[in-house]
Every structure is written in C-alpha cells, then in structure tokens.
Image (cartoon, rainbow, N blue to C red; front, side, top):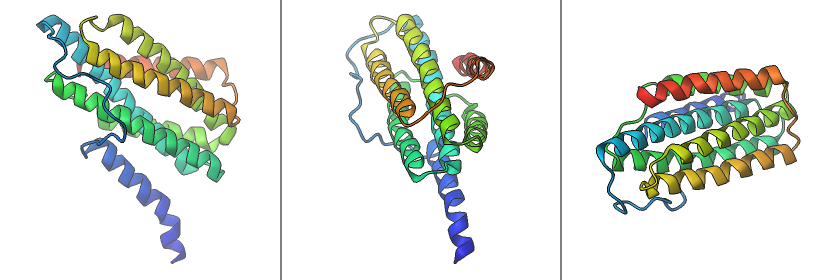
Length: 210
C-alpha cells in the first residue's frame, strides 16, 4: 500500500501528460472566439493558423511546466496553485485547438518534444524550492505576455476570433504571474531569464512552421 501511494503522483503526472497530448481538450470556460464572424483571405488564414499553432504549442509547454513543478512542489499550497494554473492553461489549450480546427490547420508536430522538455524544466525548477519555482512561473508568464502582445500586433485585424482567444489568454497569464509573485515567487537571475527567452524563441520559431 505504501509503495502504491508513492507511485500515485507519478501515475497522475503520466495521466495529465496523455490528456494534454492525446485526448481532445474540453475547456471548462466558454470559447472566447466568434466562429464564422469574418472571412479571411488565404494569406490571412495562413498567418493566423501559424500564430495559433505557436500559441497551442506554448500551452502544451505550459501544461508540462506546471505538471513538472507540481510533482516536485514542497508545500500543498504551492502544488494547488500550480495545478489550478494548469487547469486554466488547459482552457487555453482547448481554445487554441478549436481555433486551429476552424482555420483548417493542425497543431505542431513537435508537441511531444515541447511537453517532455518543459516537464523536465519544471521538475528542475521545483528542485530549487517553492520560491524559485514560483519565481519561474512569474517570469514565464511575463515572457508569455510579451509573446501574446506581439501576436496581437501580427494577427490580421479581421481575425476577431483568434484575437479574442489571445486576449483572454493574456488576461489569465497576467493573473498567474501575479498569483505566483504574491505566493512568494523570487526574482530569477538575469542569466536564467535570458536562457528562458532563448528556449522560447526556438520553440516559437519551430512551431510556426512545423
């Protein structure tokens, strides 16, 4: 019985990974988009699809990051904060998935790689303690906010559905960063922040095309 309890967190983590990568995502909140509200030309549709594929890949990575951090969290309060954020990020995943279907596009073929790498990063962050782990959340969400701001500048003005999805995601990312800082997240060293930006650039550039 004791060994089974020790395995429970790992079984739960494996289940969450399968749900994020293989199962259709059912968002718990209403879809912010407006299907059929506008007609996009081919060029606009391609740009919107590429950007929403990047956003979908980012949400896969966010799920993995939070799952890895939750697995190694020291306190129940930190673990619950991380899992709550992951549940809200799952809504983002579902919204991006729906928008990709509406645009006739597919998710990134590299999503399993993004999940595995991000889970490992989350687990490493958790190993440095809850303060560092929460600081990692705050910095990640700050950088994601910047990416979403860029996408709002690049998305076609006519694509009101994609823009509504990105706007709703952005609001949640800001809230997640604030919650992590309020819970004791510490400022990360500049070198770590720079490495995070570099890793994000590799992912976003790859997911745009693949």
